[in-house]
Structures are given as structure tokens and as C-alpha cells.
Image 1 (cartoon, rainbow, N blue to C red):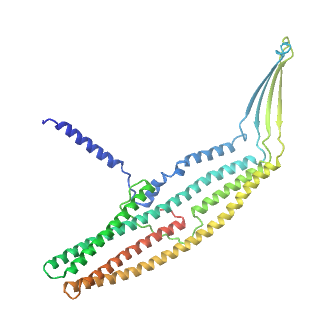
Image 2 (image 1 turned 30 degrees about the horizontal axis):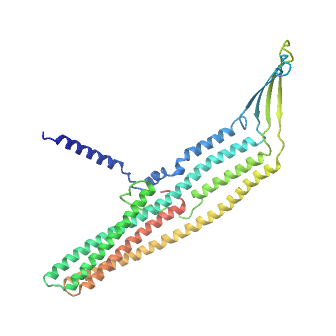
Image 3 (image 1 turned 30 degrees about the vertical axis):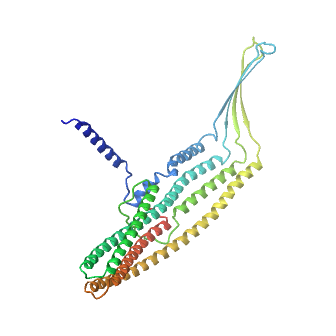
Length: 408
């Protein structure tokens, strides 16, 4: 074994291990919108706090199901005469007190706890839909940037092939120098466009990674056109608002039942003697404390909850109208995208036919290079327009599903 061979082999093994570990550390890419939504949702702050909210709702339900509205209280008191005469007077008192439910208060508390628990699920669904909208926007922005980059690369490859053919014919004297310059200029323009589209694609991929924490997907497949296109009654935003309204009404019910502080029932045990020679006496008593009604405090609590109920009812009507208007707008945009896609397809066919004729005429010497370059530019633009319109139609489908409140 040559000197230094073993250290080099160890170094190579270490580098290989680090390289493999680096590949494993790269974020996995989701190949569908549902997968991306699940992984992106796990990174959201409100998703991390979901378990704590459920625990709080469970604690409220357990409190409402308790025998008393609050914990019991134990107190101990002692009295003697050692400071004055020290005749042996002793008195011990133990009191166990617990608050009592007012009529209807426990049922109101239970209804409020159930409403709060249900609101967590509806709010969770609405937040997931909002995240789905951001993902859909990033998904189609990524698709558009990649598509533009692919078209620019194809155009650059075609321009380079044409430039190569023109330069060959220029060297043999078949074409003029101006034609060679035109072909080279077209290649440079295509190269500049390719650099721009490549940068835009990279930015779209970085934006996707910032949003999801994953590498960009290899494919951006379109979503299916929904069957129902005019229903928003089950929209998660409306359901979340309905849940919040139900919770507010339940809190208003609690406020109306809490007209006064809870009464308190106490059991007292007394053990005492007058002098040191006397025997201890024992007594047991019951104490019921009933607080007075606090009208200003009751009005403050009930008025605040009632105002929230009125606000949520007005907001519910406004959101329903807004969602219906957004749905009509998205349906119109989808219809326009389908028509534009048909027109772009026809234009692409005409431009492709003209390009074939221009190429044949140029090969036969019946037209100049400038005419061919114009035909090629028109064909490239028509193809790019067709691809954009097809992508716009797919994005409009996603926007329709978003307006309907459908998850990916």
C-alpha cells in the first residue's frame, strides 16, 4: 500500500457520506396540490396551536360538566386567650364551601363549550382553504414560469440551428452578410429571452419553497373541473362564520344566565371550650351566601356579547354576497379563457402553416431571410399565446374550485 492511500480513501469516504447526507437533507417535493397542502399546513403557526385550542375547549367542556361552577374552598380558623388571661379558652373552626350553579347557568356553559369546540374545526377548515388559495396561486405561477422557460429554450435552440444553416450558406456565397447578421441577432435576442425566463422560473421555485418548505414539484397537473359550479352554501368561510356566530350566541346565553355571582354553600364544624378544665363542645352548621345582583355588570357583559352577535350576523350576509359575486366573476373568467384558448389554437395552426410555407420558400430562394424571421417570430408568439391560454384555462378551473370552497 502506497503511503497516504488510506487517508485519501478515508477522505473520499467522508466526502461521499457528506454528499449523500446533503441529498437526504433536501426537502422532498410534493407532486400534487393535496400533498403540498398537507405539508404546508404542518408549517403554519395556527396548525401548531390547534392541539392547544382543542385542549382549552375540552377543559371548558369539563368545567361545564362539573358539579359546581368553581372549585371548593377550605378554611381553618383558631381562637385562644393566651395573650390576655391564658385561661385555656380554645376554639377551632373548619369550613368547607363550594359555589352552586344558578338555574340554567350550567346548560348555558355547556352550550358555549360545545360551540367553541365546533368552531375550532370550522375555523381550521377556513384557514386551510386560505392556504390552499396561496398554494394554487404559487402552483400556477410556477407552471407559467416553467412553461415560458421551456418555450424560450426551444426558441433559442431553433434560432441557433437557423443561424448555423445561414452561416454555412453565407460562407459558400449563397446568402449575403446581412442575412448572417440577422440570424445572429435573432439568436442573441432568443438567448437574452431565455436568460430572463430562466431567472423567472428560479424565482417561482424559490417562492414555492418559501411557502411550502419543499422543493418545487416536477409536474404541475391541472385540477378537475367541479360538477357543481353555483353553490357556496357549504363554503368553509361561511361555515367558520356560522360557527363564530353560534359561539357568540352561546356566550350571550351565558352572560344572560350570569345575572349575579354564584351562591355559595358552606358546611362549618366548630370545636371549642371556655376554660382549660372544661370539655370541648362540638357544633356543625350550614351557611348559604347569596350575592346581590349587579345590574351594571350584567348589562356590560350582555351588551358586549349582543353587539358581537349583531356584527357577525351582518358580516355573514356580507360574506355570502361577496362569495356569490366572486363565484360569478370566476365563472365568467373561465368561460372567457375557454374561448380565448380556442382562438389561440386556430391562430397557432395558421402561424404554423405560414411558417412551413416561409421555410420552403426560403430554401427554394423565393423569399429572403427577413420574411422567414417574421414568420418564425409570428409562429413562436402564436405557440406561446396558445400555451398561456391553456394555462390560463387551467388556472381558472383552480380559481373556480377556490371560489366554491373546494380543497385541492
